[in-house]
Length: 162
Image (cartoon, rainbow, N blue to C red):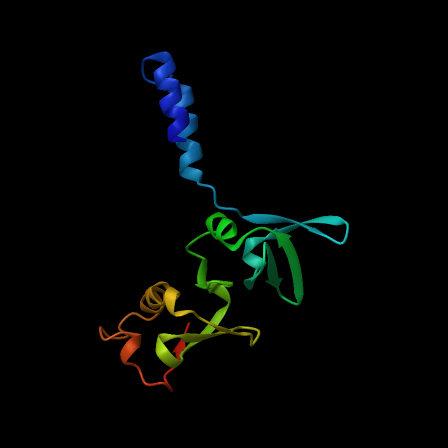
């Protein structure tokens, strides 16, 4: 967006016309977060609402979208997909996993600063240490008054209900 603004300013030598400026601001405010993904599956095109996705796993240059009992395969990298999804709803917990926070039922401390996330359907996902800060932020937001000591000092048997 900024490149478009700069280009038009340089070309016109003045501020952008009012309607064009308003349009650019509206597009910026909307952001680029997807409400649904387009997935080609079995010779058809499926529009999958992101709210239905439980978790996502990497498979080379593909991703597997787990939505209920269905698994959809999409040609996309984790990094590109992570940037498309709503950061308030989806968190990358491992280099090969992104989870929908609305589907997390429980977070259990694991070994060496890692966690195990248990989803509503019973699926267990292990976090990576490199993504610990993101999950610590999630835990702090989900459990106000959990203590300033943070998850690092919790007993291994403690569970955090979300």
